[in-house]
Length: 295
Image (cartoon, rainbow, N blue to C red; front, side):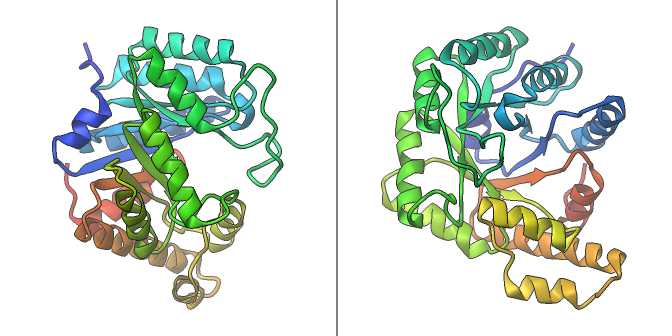
């Protein structure tokens, strides 16, 4: 018998440093095996929670629900299930929430989500659906029964007119009922600290967890960063580029850079770290080794 899931806001409110991991729904049997190998390798570190993403356009809805339910059944970890506005009517969103509740899931990450064509594509609401993440937060908060997480953007959402305007949106989500936030990847600690300061200046005490993505492949991270508005700083590029085509050395430098970022964030008062694992455990465990995090 596994332990019952715990509300993430209670865990964050305990004052203990939070470590959490993010996974995505696998596409096939081999991907499922890889995912569960990563989950089993990371479970002994007793994460505060583990999150399971929701594919573009709601394309992985059923798989997300299956993975999240299995985490409840087969592990002692607290799951955070993602849910987006994209491609869903309000009735369909309610159906997903019913299924999560029935499975024993108590925490949801609520996002507008990216259009199926990608994050830079024009946003068009689904007929009968919702337009903004704030709308989804309001719906779930009124329903009750879930702790609510939302996304945060240290460098500002690509669609925001400014970082101040983006902070206004995050604070509005907090006022609508969000209990905590998790940032997308970023590579300058100061961007995170500046975001927290903007939110605090607006009177919101929303816990904001920094999202960590180690750079294992510079070209791939740059492409992803361009899509979501997360720049790779010149000094980081220089440290990685110094190793040329030596992929092993580039990877090692990426792990070292991620560990340095984590140390700076924790020293500056971040309540924890949220690792984007890409369904693998090795890089996260290597960062833990640098941080002296033990089982």
